[in-house]
Image (cartoon, rainbow, N blue to C red; front, side, top):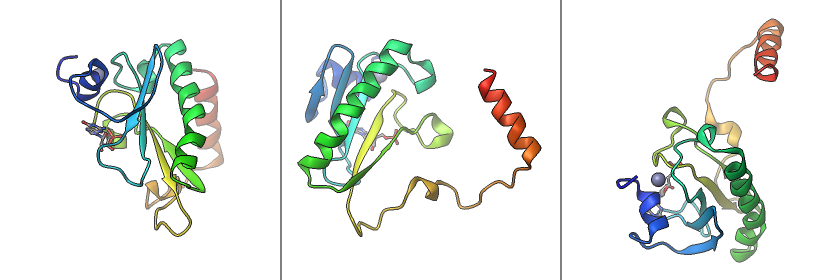
Length: 139
Ligand code: 5GP
Ligand code: ZN
């Protein structure tokens, strides 16, 4: 993917502040951080969404997120972090190459929890919830 920013970072054509690297995964500081230490964790191979990742690459990405989260928090003396993937354009994903965000959080940082994603929550009946649960479980 010649025109993918993150593929160009993997190739070394665009510089980044790399904090972790293995055969499948690269992690580097976000260029426009939401907090000091804001880190992105990406598969080296180009895949647009989490849904597109082969299982072994998904496992490698999550293993790196798991290992890096405490390292990121400790590096900037954060007491917590928000860890999230914008998965697809409608969810706000701007760079179409899978990336997890590790955003360090601090008491009174003015940030909000993941429940602030929507301003209006859907009113779902028990039957609708049962159908959704069945559809997910039966996938
Ligand atoms: P998204 O909105 O797609 O989940 O997040 C994309 C993230 O990539 C943003 O937080 C943005 O600051 C970061 N980003 C975009 N271009 C670059 C870049 O060239 N280098 C680095 N290090 N981060 C980038
Ligand atoms: Zn890419």
